Length: 325
Image (tube, rainbow, N blue to C red; front, side, top):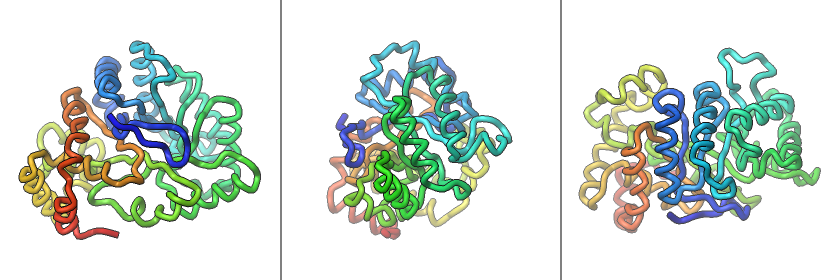
């Protein structure tokens, strides 16, 4: 497992990481979470991603219990959480968003659920149009000063909002955001490759990208146009995911062609899709999700597929995709 710096910070994260979105609390209980975390850690993964809104806080509870049972040295791994959506059904105005009140209280609640003394990474999960960016920047800075958070960042923020946060932090000598967590994969490229481009060499920006397999579409398992049995329950619970993976025949056609290319170069479609993300030098880490140990073990092999993506293969992928920003 190789490691990359998180933007211009000194923190090094594993190229592949493990997240709990959709799975922990829904498909994964504490026992299975412990097995998955252990599998990832033993393979060299050092970053585990979470959020207050995942399973309404249950995801953090499960990860916290699993980490406690595993008993690893705290200085050997990285844990994140995110704040914005809240951790309860139908949250009241003070239980969501990026106000100072919610940021501070949500951090304390996340630490309690995760059974940790501090968060390595803390993300503002979405931009909040109702809160001045300076209020959120100052709240994050204060959490860092208190030792509750080591680095803070954003998730799915527009580039101009990130730049605004950096400008405010510089003006008032506060801690700026270090990282962004955007969606990035073969089918979703504009933000990471074009919109954020000025930020990588400017203020510095690390990216902890999510959905490298486009919610399963880039695994090839939907190539028939129908959801396999092992995915139907998930798609029923997350209807918007079903619309994403089965609602565009043109995307399915691209994945079918990509699947054939993966076979030609001696790998499998999911591994090629993850390896393609890793080829981007501005991707600090690719967050993997899994509901089974075997699934995680398979996707960790994507590191071996990177060498197969020669310039000629990358050019062939670009021809199939036809979506370079």
